[in-house]
Length: 380
Image 1 (cartoon, rainbow, N blue to C red):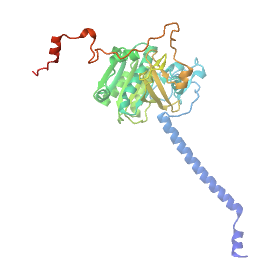
Image 2 (cartoon, rainbow, N blue to C red):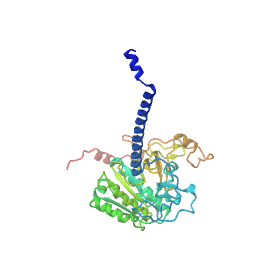
Image 3 (cartoon, one colour):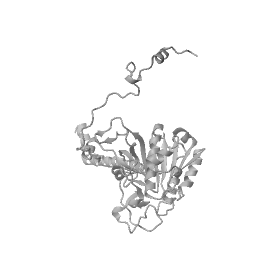
Image 4 (cartoon, rainbow, N blue to C red):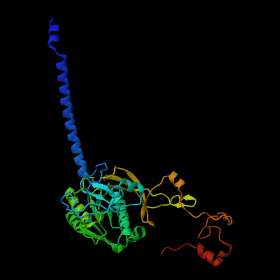
């Protein structure tokens, strides 16, 4: 037997296949464990940030979202929602609570409300984020629009706007006449609290969030301060849940960091569409205020982007329609009369005074006035 035959005799194909399979199973088991570990870590991070895209079923015996809870515990303390049909319940957070439809603030834009599973939560902390300083006006206008929706549904209680001196110095205060004209908010209903430091602003917001005498609390923060962390936002969210009032966290020129807010909306100004007339869009005109709204974070919705227009007459948002949608559903206007006379021809140039060199026949100056008129003016 040659050496090659000897080695072939010592080599067992079955033993080799078994060892190879065991090695592959070991590698697959190790990769599967690593994969499960990575998935578990990703899921835990998504749970902390509230970015789970899945829709969860309502657990048996869950309590409503506005039931009194212990803010330090993740269990509800009230009786189950026996009088609410299961199809009308939406899970907000695993093991925490389920919410009836009236627990959400509907904006009026069907696309955004559907994406948010009914709208913004009323008794919660909601983050409205502006990526740059130039978006501060859009963020403030959107927050005032939400306040207008709240005041339209419930008692007209005052609203407290909290910020540091840097915030109001950089972005200014809302215009009083614009509050009433665009949002139906009386100037005396909007209260301002200017804090010297961010720590004082956070303390004021926590104390105001527990008050039921306010319709809403607005906290405006600039940049990405270290004190605005998960602990601080959890406290604000817990106070808002216990009081049943919304707290809006406005962020100016800050990075999107993890917060306890169930929803984060990224705001920027959108170009206003021209006004609609009988003859079509009026060129060069400025229509309703428009916003570009992106869902940056939501516990029940996937990311999405919408262009909303604020209707100051109806006090609600409307999703901007495309040109084909406008043609299919035109703006209802009164048609022109067909029995009237033909319109007059366009007039020529209208001047406040006659053109130079061609005075009117009755406006000829006298010879003395003409000489005085042509006399040069003396200096001094």
